[in-house]
Image 1 (cartoon, rainbow, N blue to C red):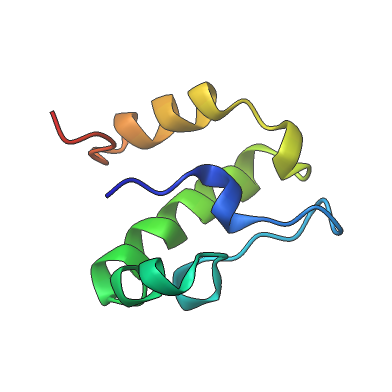
Image 2: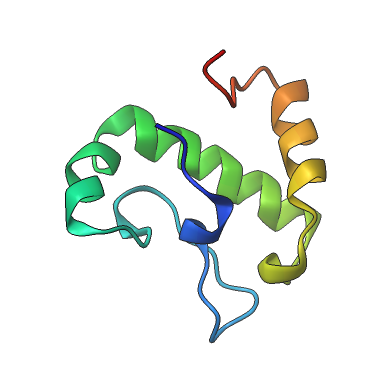
Length: 78
C-alpha cells in the first residue's frame, strides 16, 4: 500500500502535520496503518515535510519524495 501525503495533514491548520495512528484514513485502512512500520515511515515523511515547509497543502510532493528517496526510503513497490 502507498499512503498519499494528504493523509498526514488537514485543511484547517496549515502548519499541523500528523503521523502514525493519528493520520486520516478510512475504517478499512486503519488496520493497515496502525502497525509500527507504517507509523515509522509516516513519521519520517512528516518530519521531512516539517523541515521543508510550514504549509503542507502547498508543499511540492515531488521534492518531498526526492528528499525521502535520498535518505533511502522506498516509496514505490516496483
